[in-house]
Amino acid sequence: MTMSRRSGPRFRPSLALVLLCGLLAILLVAGGASRADATGQVVVRATAWIALIVAVLFGPRPTWGPARPVAILLALAVLLVLLQLLPLPPGIWPSLPGRRILMEAAAASGQDQPWRPWSIVPGATINAASSLIVPVVTFLLLAGTIDAERARLPALILGLVTASTLVGLLQLSGAGIDNPLINESPGQMSGTFANRNHFALCLALGILAAPVWAMLDGRRPGWRAPVAVGLMLLFILTILASGSRAGLVLGMLALVLGLVLSRQGIRKALAGYPRWVFPALIAGVIGTVAIFVLISLAADRAVSIDRVFAGDEGQDMRSRGLPTVLAMTRTYFPWGTGLGSFDPIFRMHEPFALLKPTYFNHAHNDLLEIVLDAGLAGGLLLLAGLLWWTVASARAWQAGAGMRHALPKLGSAMLLLIVVASAFDYPARTPIVMALVVIAGFWLSEAPSRAGQVRAGQGWTTDPSFTGEDAATIDADRSRHPGNRSAHA
Image (tube, rainbow, N blue to C red; front, side):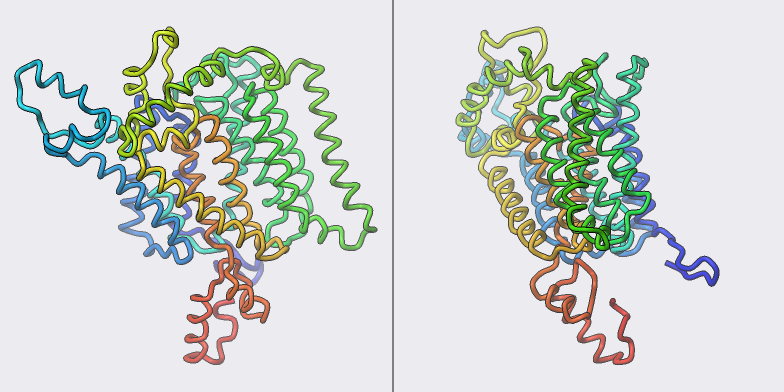
């Protein structure tokens, strides 16, 4: 940040922010697929490695401070995947549940039993380990930015969601858009994603980000307010047209959370108006959304609602395949089958009644699939992440009513939507959603502690990520520089 006598403060992004923006732009184009054989995987992983090398050579040293829990969870996830690739001796490997049948190949060929890794499908687990470069680099780049730069990320996320929406609208219009980097389904409205449910989650995240962008830090929304309302309406209508039934749940939840996130900012903007203006405005927004939804229904564009009342082979397959998935989870517990191994393992257990020309690529319940793939260790890591989210969210939502606390609350709400979506599908396996999970977790970790709130109330700081550790640092600095009152404000 530099000062110009004529123009005032001028924003100069750091190298970390520039690299992060570039990475997110590449993820928008090539990071919407989860399949290992999608061409986009090569592009996004190569971009992440290049960004990492540039950041290490030329960027500042990352400091994650209050985001330490996110760093620990991410490090444990990487460690778990790598442990599943360690070879085990023939005397131990057969003792793992579900492995004995796989020993018949070596016995039939007259060979000695080889050392085998914990994962039954090591190639798939290697791909899972390789995919984690995206969230790791995203975290390190975030750790190299400052608070003012991270406060600009809602605008960036909103821009990414809008760009994906425009692609989806072109698909809806009949334009033959073929993205060679992802395995999208022809004729399906999925934006820059390979899956319309993942696209609907992206739109729901845009509904959340729009009001925060309009009123972040308690500023008067001005022209941003009508733009935010218009974008929220666009995203809702696009969810309806996408055909995603899970998107209906996510969209409604996002709309409610978005209004809750922005209510204090709206009240502040309407401070000089009568009290009835606020509820009238909220009712007007909800009424406008309802009117456009009815118009969408009348125009036969609400495909998501139509699919609620129509039979769906894919949904039927999810319910029919659930007993088999549960049985597999019990069979391989507590060690699991290896991360990324669901497809070939399911084919080993697939009953004849479920055979069809297409294959069942995932459990369509990522919370359950993590336990199947990673066993007890994966379940405990997932539970630890959910417990941290619960505690951090409680701290974020109790921190204060001002919009300066909006980013931790936005992070909490984004993670909630992603967890809900993961109960129906597997969105967090796509590189772009991996990056958004890390961004949301970083924001949430900056929720002020009780010590930080006390110091902020005494006028010492307005930083929403202020913690008791920061307070001690300020005390020490002030003892050395008593005249510098605003150095850390």
